[in-house]
Length: 626
Image 1 (cartoon, rainbow, N blue to C red):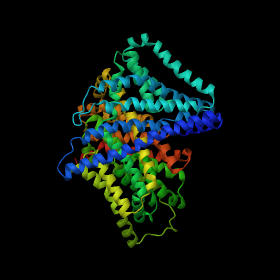
Image 2 (tube, rainbow, N blue to C red):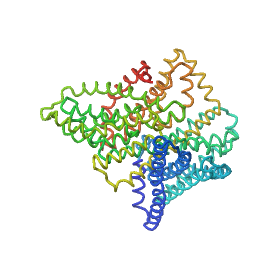
Image 3 (tube, rainbow, N blue to C red):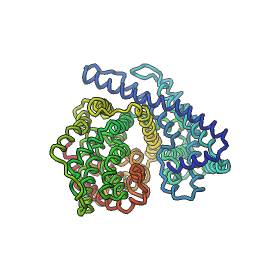
Image 4 (cartoon, helix red, strand yellow):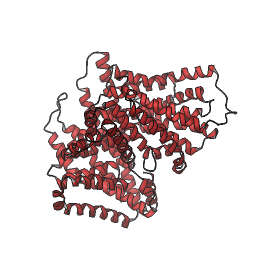
C-alpha cells in the first residue's frame, strides 16, 4: 500500500502541472462528495440501531422498520466506504512480493493493480445495473418501497471506484508505463476470452485455473484482494459456465449486506473512540501500576492490555494503535529492543483474535450460522491460554532485566489508577453481557458500546476531541468498505465452489482422513495458517467456512471449538512474516523497520503454536462455559 502511494507521489512530481492539478482537483472534489455521505451513514446506523434497542428493550415497543432501514443504508455504507478506500489506496493487498521488486517493476505492478481493479469494475458494471433494475420490481416488507433504493448502491459504488481508478491512471506521469500496464491487463483478459472454447470442457480443472491460478497471481502481483477474487470468480462464471453474471452481483450483495456484518463498521468506530477518549490509556496505566515493577512487567502489560482492548474494539489495527503508543516509549526507555516490541505486539494481535467482539467471530457467525453468543462466550478462555504461553516466553527472555531505576507503585497509586480505569475496564463486560443476556443482538450491542464510550469520554475522562470525529467516521467507512468488499467477492467465490460440486469432493476427502477428528483438526490448522498468511482471516473464513464447518460437525468436532482453532491458526498466519500483513501493520504502528522484528517474532509464534495445540487438544477450553 505504501509503495503504491510513494510511486504515485513520485509520478505526481514529474507530471505536467495542468494535468496533475486538474486530476487532483477532480479527485479531491469527488472524494469529498463520497466521504461526507459515508460519514453521515455511519452516524445514521448508530442512531437507528440504538433507537431500536431502546424501543424494544426499554419501551417494549419494537420498531419493525429499524432493521430494514439499517440494511438499506448498510449496503450504501459498504459501497461508499469501498470507494473511499479505493481513493485512499487502502484496500487490503499483499505487498510482500511487490515490495521486493526493483523500483521500475514496482511502479509497473502498482499501475497494473489499478488497471486490474478497473477491469473488474468495468466488467461487473452492466450486471450490477441489471441487478438493481430487477430489484426495482421487489417491494420491501416494512417500509413498502422499491428495493432498488438499496440495490442501486452496487452500480453507484462500482461507478465511483471506476472513476477513482481512471483519475489515478490520469495522474500517472509515465504514459508508456501506463499504456504498458493497460495493454498487459487487456492482453491477459483477451487471451482468456479467446481460450473460452478450450476452457469449458475442462470441468473442475477450471477451479484450479481461476481460483488458484488467477486469484493467486492477482494477489501476489499486488492487486487488492477484493478485486483479485472478483476477477477470478467473474472469469470462471463468464468463460466456463452459462450462469447469468447478474447472479454474481446477487451473491456479492448477499455477502456484503448480511445484517450481522453491520457490527463491523460500528465496532471499528468504537475502537477509534476508546483511543480518542483516553479509555485505552487508562486501562494501560492501571495494568502498568500493577506489573510495571517486575521483570518483563511492561511486556505482561502489553499482553493484558491487548486482551482487554480487543474486548472492546474488535479490530486488530485499532487494538494495536490504541496500546502501542502508550507503552512503547517507556519500554524503550527500560532497554527493550524495538524489534522485540513489534514482535510481541504482532503476537498479541494473533493471541486476541478470539476475544469478543472479534470481527472474525462475527463473520463466522454470519456465514456458518453458528450462534454469535456462543462464539463470544467460547472465545474468552483460548485467548487466556495463548496469553499464558506468551507470558512464559516473556519471563524467560526478561528474567535478568535490570529494574534498579524503576519505582514500584504504591497501594494508593494502584487504587487511584484502578478507579480511573474502572469505566474502561467495565466496557468489555457490558458488551458481552448485553449479548448473552439478550438485551441486544451482536449487531446492536456495538451501539451500546459507542453510547457508553461517548458518555465516559465526555463525563468521566473529559477527553473528547470533536475535531477528530469526522475523520474517525470517514476512517470507519473506509476500513469497513475494504473489509465488506472482500466479503462480497469471496462470497461469490464460495458460491461458485459450492455450485461446482467442489464442496462435496472436499467433504468426502476430509471425512475420509485416517485418524478421524484429530487428523481433520491438524489439517485444518496447517491449512488456515497458510490461508491466514495469504488471504487474511475474513476472506479465508468466507471462502472455506461454509465448506468446512459442516465437515467438522460430521466428524464430531464441536463447531465453537472448531471456530476457535481455525481463528487462532489464521491469526498466527496473519501475523507471521514474510507474508502476514498483520506483522507489517504492527511494524507501521510501532514505527519500526520490519527487518528488526523478524528474528524475535519466531519465538513468540512458537509460543502461540503451543497454546493453539493446547486449545485443540482440550475442547473444554472453548466450550466449557456454553
